[in-house]
Image (cartoon, rainbow over all chains, first blue to last red; front, top):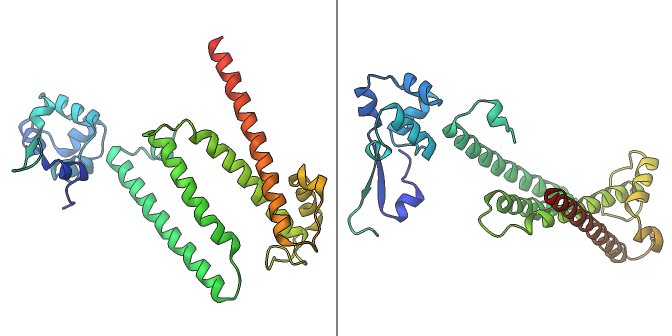
Length: 84
Length: 178
């Protein structure tokens, strides 16, 4: 697994996404979702695995396709003792 | 601007990895470049061009970075790059022409045999304008003097380039205003 990004590390936060669950809820394959938002299947896989953080545009498109908000799809978890 | 990434139809993740691949390739080229310098030195040759291009590539890298990143006041970058490339291009072209012209003389270390004297000579005449044309040069004279005159000549070209840039900008401003 790729190490956490510099920005996340500096702010003692971690980005968690619920893409896989919500994609399953919508009964979509990675391929189908990828096609709908205009990216490759591997990109969906990388996001689900937390290897890749999508751009704001892609995050909005994903949330739109899954009929939810970006906030619900991606979650910022703050670590203990980190800066607020 | 349409890039090769657009042509290849890459999505944002692929673009990121493509740029990472570019960086790795660049680093590899850098290593090969250094090995070439080392090889030339072990062969007893002085790889002037290879060594001179190291800080130039580094400078270009930073220049392009500040141009694209725009995370500083980059108003100076475009004219600086323009002037640097102009003066540098002039310098390199002049040096190349001199290599051809004085390939049998003591100039520019061990130069290869000239490929075509007439062509090199013509290039030198153009590139030496105006200062060296006026002052003249003496192949038997001290090397530093020739270098100094070439440097001043390049600065003059850079100054001329800057004036052209200013004129172009003024023209553009006027057109925009109109």
